[in-house]
Amino acid sequence: MATIVAVVTSNEERAKGGGAPVFIVKDHDALQKVGGSLEKILDCTAHEITDDTLIIVER
Amino acid sequence: MELYLLAVVVGVGFGCLARFRLLRTDFRQYPTYPQGRFIHLSLGFIAAFIGAVAVPSVLDSNWTAVTFLGLAATQFREVRKMERDTLEKIDEDELVKRGSPFIEGMAQAFESRNYLVMFTSLVTTLLTVFSIWLGIVGGFIMLFIVKRNMSGMILSSIADVKEGEIRFEGPNLYVSDIHIKNVGLEETRQLIQDRAVGVIVIPKGEDSIVTLSHLGQRQAMLHQVATVLGSYLDSGEPSLLPLSKRNMNDGRIGLFMMPQERDFKQIKTVLEHVPVLDSAIRLPSEADKGKGKR
Image 1 (cartoon, rainbow over the protein chains, first blue to last red):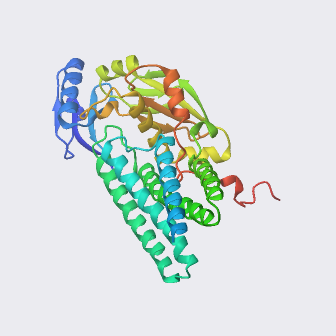
Image 2 (image 1 turned 120 degrees about the vertical axis):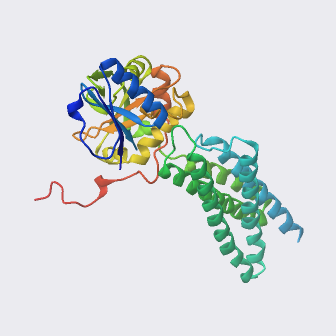
Image 3 (image 1 turned 120 degrees about the horizontal axis):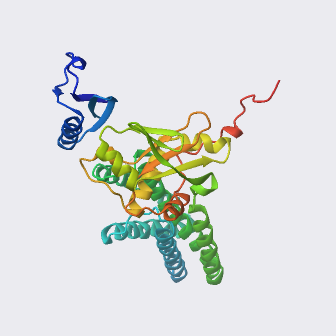
């Protein structure tokens, strides 16, 4: 089963508690950049849930 | 005495020849490194010897000596287990894994080849006891039979391979109309658009639909292409990992892969020669399921 290891979002409203660390970023470019770094560092995959939110998933 | 010696030598010779032929013909055979080939050939030699030596024992009514054939069976099973464990360990570090069913098939093939070699030398020795020419002819016939039996089915006999279009709908990657996965990063999407190849594998009939749905079979297809054609991949890039998805309506399989060279003709050829795994083969058409009966 897969686990969400991190959430990156540019919309503060999206982030509620849940156990995975949430990274709040300013805009779309930062979203992509932070998501990309996390993907490489964690060796996990980034998925787009909505326009302003990415989740990093470990399988 | 001398007759037996000649028969055994001829039997062992043909057994070893059979093992050597089997080592070459099936491209799924993995021992390309010196040690692996040597192990296989040595075990083949032992199997051939056991098979050959059984004949003089039986002819001399030394029945208890035949029990060592049972010992041989145990040994081959042990060796198969060893092969399987080694392959599983190596598979952990593969960029595109073989998958357990593929490995199981390889280990089984390894064991069955040893048995085939044993029977080849047994039959050849038996025939040589009567006449050396009969033995030699029989040996060649056995080589032919053995080679024919070992070539299993390849993918082209159960499915057609067509190119699929790689396209994105937002973050979702599609191969033609089959959804593959969600790709979050735009950089990765661009990379996929530039370098990925999509393939649609269309099953030829009711049996093929079920066979192709087998996850081990699909993983074997991906592994084969990645191994033969290279992969634009690295550890730490799980989003570029080849993936297969099934269209649940009609059983078509969509493959997403990133070969080193983007040449569909090569990919098609490799895929058509992917072996159909023994553990994946299903024949629902032969089952009595009351379909069509009133």
